[in-house]
Amino acid sequence: MQEIGANLSAVRGRIEGAARAAGRAADAVTLVAVSKTHPADSVRAALAAGQRVFGENRVQEALAKFPGLRGDFPDLILHLIGPLQTNKVKDAVAHCDVIETVDRLRLAEALAREMERSGRRLPCFIEVNTGEEPQKAGVLPEAADAFIADCRGRLGLPIVGLMCIPPEHEEPALHFALLREIAKRNGLDKLSMGMSADFETAIRFGATHVRVGTAIFGARRVAAAAAK
Image (cartoon, rainbow, N blue to C red; front, side, top):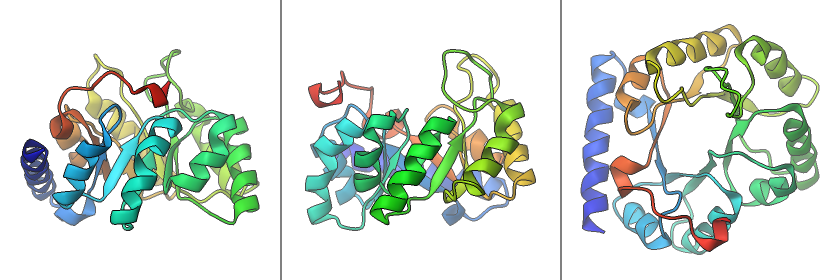
């Protein structure tokens, strides 16, 4: 658990260095600590070290860990960073604070209905499949402008930015540059991009949120039963 605190300190130092090299303020970049597959005790260790923003892939796993932690750390912020099924929208809106993976019309419509019903409006990022990979979620780049306009206009979703996961074996800078361009022409100023292996490059291309898991918590563990 002490190692998590040391890892967090090292990652924060790298973020500060990358931001400074890019002529940006360190506090312009939010570190989202990706705690998927790691137990609540690991999250608690990060919270004790001052981390407050976390990312989970699955609603079920988030529900298994975070309600109990909020009692001691009411200022924690939980981002949903994995695929969201429409039948999990109600729980996601109730228990998460940010949705980063709005990736299709049916999901956007379900989120809009639930936010209207609950009165709880969560900031949303649209996920863009910058690599046009058939196995990955996300709106294709050529469809992004129309999708963003529909989500903001007709559905009234609080779209604040864009998110991407570059292809594993391609130069991430190309994808970060593409995401930045789509965001710029749509007047969006938040970019969730960059993970443990490439977040410094992402910061150079304007990332406002970096999603870092392995560099903080270590190798991914086998998912808990609650996440299945």
